[in-house]
Image (cartoon, rainbow, N blue to C red; front, side, top):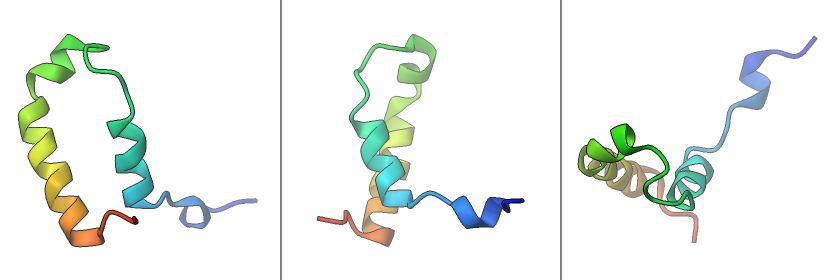
Length: 51
């Protein structure tokens, strides 16, 4: 049996994967993109960009 805490994704890796998605794949999502970009920028600053 595997526990959920054994497989927690790296937040920076998750952000990088989301950034690689093409724009326009979900118009409803894109409508709120500015706020999400601000939140992602805050996470990048908090956790570093991994580069």
